[in-house]
Structures are given as C-alpha cells and as structure tokens.
Length: 169
Length: 204
Image 1 (cartoon, rainbow over the protein chains, first blue to last red):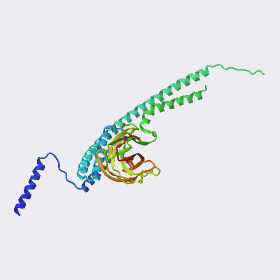
Image 2 (image 1 turned 30 degrees about the horizontal axis):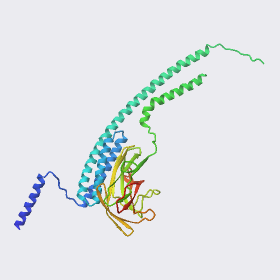
Image 3 (image 1 turned 45 degrees about the vertical axis):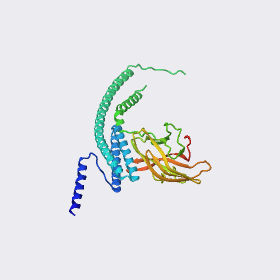
Image 4 (image 1 turned 60 degrees about the vertical axis):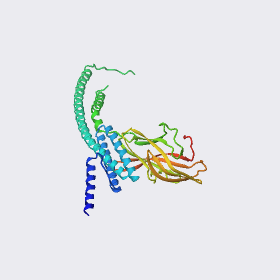
C-alpha cells in the first residue's frame, strides 16, 4: 500500500514538474466544455461586431476593427468545424483564442465610439455656432440692403413727374 | 417692378441664404434615405474569372473555386457562408419562400464587410472514398480547404446528361443585430460536378 502511495505521489510530482518547466500548455477538455467555449466565442464575436457597428454609427473609422473581426470570425469557423469533426481540444483552444480577439475588438470599439461621439459633438456645436452667426449677419445685412433699396425706390417714385395722357378717340 | 414684388424677391433671397448657411448643420442632423440595400454572392473559377469552373471531377483530384461576398447594406455587415453538398434528390434552398436547404453545412466562412466592401475567399476541394457500383456512384468524403468531411452521398447514372451529378452549393446568411441571430439571406450559388472514374480535362 505504501509503495503504491509512493509511486502515485512520485508520478504526480513528475507531472507537476513537467508542467512547471514546460513552455506549452496542456489542455484536456471534453466535448461539452468545448461546445460551451465555442458558444461563448460566438457570443463574444457578436458583441464585438455590435460594438463595432455602434462605433461606425457614431462616425468612427472601423476598418481596422473589421480586419480583426475577420480574423476572429475565421478562428471561430475553425473552432466550430473542429467541434463538428469531434476534435474537442482544437475547438476549445481556437474558441479561447477567438474570445481573446473579440474582447479586445469590443474594448477598442467602445473607446473609438466614445471618441467619435466627442468629436461629433464638437463638430456639431462648431457648425451650429457658425451657421447661427452666419444667418444673423446675413439677415441683418439683407435688412439693411432692403431699407436702403426701399428708401431709394420711394425717393425715385416721389421725384417722378406725373404724366397725364389723353386718349384720342 | 412694384415695391411688393421687390419684397418677395428679397424674402426669397433671404430664405435661400438662410438654408445655405444652415445646410452644414442640417447635414449633421438630417439623414436622407440611401439607395437600395442588397448583398452579393458569387462563385468564380480558379483564375478569379467566370470560366474554367471544375466540372468533371474524380477521386483525389484537387479543385479550386473562389466564393465572393459583396456588401451594399449601408453599414458594416456580418455574413456567414455555408458550404453544402447534395445529390440530385436532396433539396436546394427555396428562393420563393426564402428558406435555406435543410442539409447540414459542411464548411463555413465568417465574413465581416464594411459598406461597399467585398471579399473573395478560396474554396479548394477534393473527393475521396469514391466508388462506382452498377449505375450508382458514391462519394464517401469531401475535403474542403484541408478539412475532411464524411458525406456519404450516392447518385444514380443520369442518362439524359450522361454523368453522375453532385452539386456543391454555398448559402449566404446574414446577422441581424436587432434579433441577435442569423437568417438565410435568400442568396445561394452552386456548381454541378460530374463524378468520373477516369481523368478528364476540367472545364465548364
């Protein structure tokens, strides 16, 4: 019994040491875990796309985000096909990779949206100020021109001599 | 010209001037409806042209087409292209009802496109475990872009067109942010493939 225990402890120690000194990561997962990871990746990509769409509607340039979404979408497709082919480990690792990219895209899209909204607000108030000022100046100038024109018109009418014409039968 | 007529002219000039000066701000607030919204889906041959499509295919031969998607939906759009494979008795999508084919997708592309953007992706495919028995042909496995799929499809000899005809088709699905789901976009493209036992020249 003691020998079995000693061997088991040694085996676990060896596994722990290999894990500690290896650069790779060993992932062992079942089909259920892989399936739920792929589902999470799908949701993460949708959220990232929705955030990108919001940023675009706010006026941000989203070309860079679309490129990265395509990268995430390609990995998600690979994860889904790996899951369909029964390759759970590959599906899981691809899903994790995809979630990482999607979350980073979403964060960046949120920042871009806030920045675009700030910029749009500034542009709106600048345009509104110039439009209102321009309209006020234009209307005042137009009224002055109208008064000058009216005065000239009336003066011209008053200075005219009345002419009487007689109709000849 | 009477003074009243001049007044009307001044009022018209004033109105036009006010509209011109307000137009930059109005442009930020008012959004005019854009043109027709639609998406494109196409398939091209190995030279990115509508020619030299694979037609006569055989076991272990390698074939290449390009699948393209174009976005004219007025904003960035998230598409999925499903690659499906059928024999002549299995259903295609129904363009009248807008229903997709009930066949399970083999391969999929996920494509994100900005408005007026398009993308073309390669679709390399090959067949394995092909057998012929009597007047029937069976395809056991279809490999798309290096990913193998068990298909196990059989067709009978088509006496009218002299061949064993299978169809590779691609469906376009679109993501709707409002419902947070994908729906069939009522677009699909397909290529008929004649399975042969010996080497044939490819061509449409």
